Amino acid sequence: MIRLAAALAALLAGPSHSSAVTFADGQVHIIDAASSFPLDDVEVLDGPGGSQTTVRLVEGGQIGSPPPFAFSLIGYGSSDLYVDGGSVSGAIRLKHSTQVHMSDGSAGTVYIDTQDNRTTA
Image: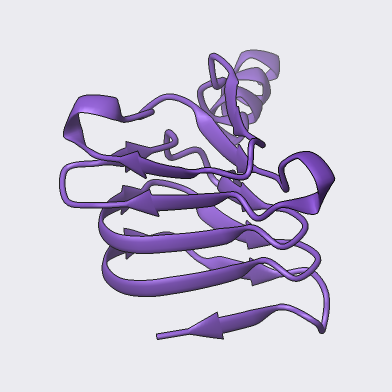
């Protein structure tokens, strides 16, 4: 019974991410098949002086592994997230005034942490 409980706990925890990739430079970053992060979370933060950092996920791009309740793409500050293709295996989490624009591709769920967040379709 103890082994079953330990196995169930490990299954619910899901595989561990190897790391988190952080973009916080006020630039635009394209995530495609050649520059994917299929086993990593991606965090997007404002750049120096509060400049807006943008991440655009396009066809062939992958972010995050699929453990339950995982946030694979997280935006902070005034960052801008575009899902124009590709896939986010876990959820997208929006904090502060982050915006997400989804026109194609797939994601688990989108969580909005504060009332000042905006989404567009």
